[in-house]
Image (tube, rainbow, N blue to C red; front, side, top):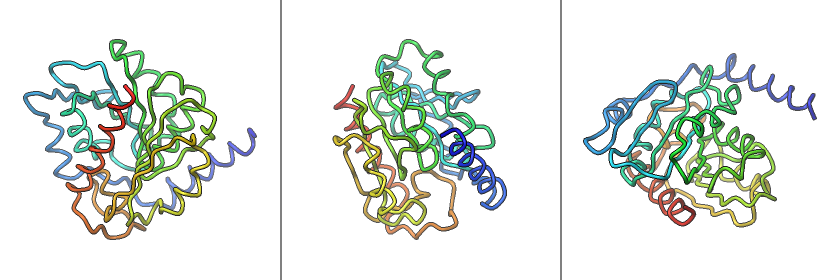
Length: 236
């Protein structure tokens, strides 16, 4: 098992640092979202924190996709926080979550007043979040995958799971998501964003290998957040 895990790490390291494109930077919409609002306080340090000024007892830890600027998920975080869900985007070493898998530990320790924790991740970030939850599922009320699948077998965990995929995703296709469903509890909720693609779960521009979306990023994010908020509300 250890040799196999090391091999996977080496393959990931080679692919994402040598073959894949350079880091995908946050776009203008994301940078605007980083300004927050009168009701939402945004801070950037070890973590990127979107916090409702009026406070909340519900928080979401978010692991970004591979080689994606974590700021790119600010539009998603802003929308979630408007619904009183404190959202914490976790920057990763070299923008690869595999090298910071346990950073959620620090988040939970830093914000002890949060009572209802949820875990989420996009693409590679979701897979690594699944790895983390393999030994930490009891600390969370639910797990949300965006265009992703778990990196470990969570099928025997008592953990609500929401899997959101996009019909025009050329990176993590619908078939890829379906083929990994056995790694999740049988109670998993599955949602397909019709017309959405891989990159529009964030704001970082075009991603090589993706397909062209048939809906706007705004529509895709609004739809995604609607499903996330409903899931969180049902499991708080």
